[in-house]
Length: 102
Image 1 (tube, helix red, strand yellow):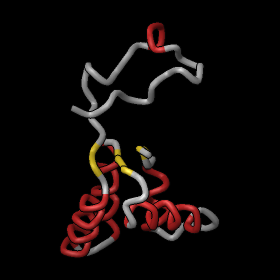
Image 2 (cartoon, one colour):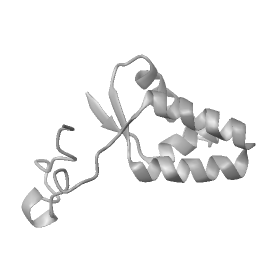
Image 3 (spheres, rainbow, N blue to C red):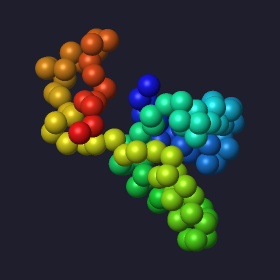
């Protein structure tokens, strides 16, 4: 199964935000056990990088980001995977979240 992990789920785990940290921990455990193929948005990476650099010493922030990138792939964001709502079936269960990566 392929999943996209949203920015706040990553922050819930890294910042141990209650009550969400338990759910985030379960998701990360599934990723670590390779039970799911997990992706992050590129904007999640830049947001987490920025926040880690503000909250941690640079070396620790870089290590945390490197560890995150070892677990997750980056979801492609390009014309091939983006479909305007008028052609994608916006609001229906038939709308693909993103196309298969190349």
